[in-house]
Length: 211
Image (cartoon, rainbow, N blue to C red; front, side):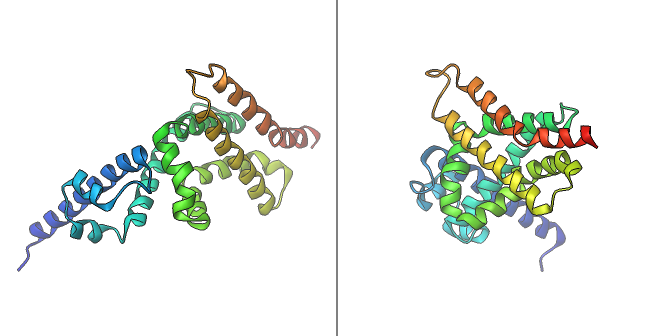
């Protein structure tokens, strides 16, 4: 008969195996990309059996989704850290957006979240993943900033979506213009982000002043 202690050990060992798989898969997916990462490479990197892999994940795509969740959660924490240092919602939005751009323009996160993520997971699953993390944070602050306008929820969501697309594209652009060859690239991103935000934020400010 299995004892509670034995059951707890199995659960702990299972959690450790899952964590090892995600960490090893993240390294390989970030370095080599999803398509070039084989199941065999994952097993070699972790020292686990194929049975252990499929005990925790249905397939390689399911494991990739877990990696995306982990990377997204890590970057969401960076967004929160940057935004928490700002008092006004517009400043929180800008600081958080810039933190995301800086983080996801690095080769590893960019490969997982911006290059492989949308194509591997598909548009719907990718949108749901984004909605659980970075987009949820962005939407919340955009809704707070635009609240004085009394916009319909769909209009607020459209504004947040437009900003989200611009932020992700700026991250891709910054990745294509590394600092060693383009010393003014990040300043250009900051200026562009300010212009993008200015097309949304002043509307609320003007409404407040005219109220």
